[in-house]
Length: 81
Image (cartoon, rainbow, N blue to C red; front, side, top):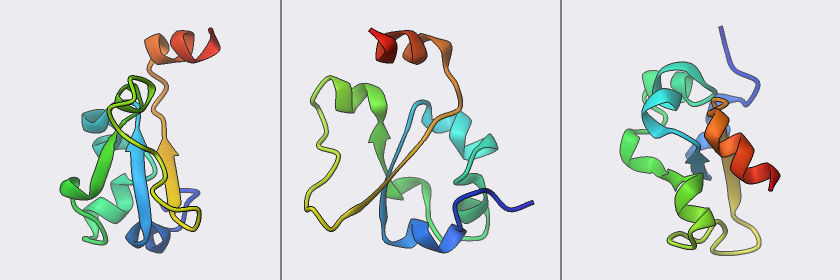
């Protein structure tokens, strides 16, 4: 079953997640990862690093970014505050 985001878009995108190990198994980028469109090294980071300003989300205004969340409850609470 294919995810909602077409696997090919991942080639050009900067990818973030809430929990990298979990998303590799169950979310939108499980498919592009399993068919070789992206590799684990292509994942820019987790949202916690963005919130802590350890990572920039966009490096240019034309850059495509993808944030895929698996629904980690702790992050949901933090993002709502």
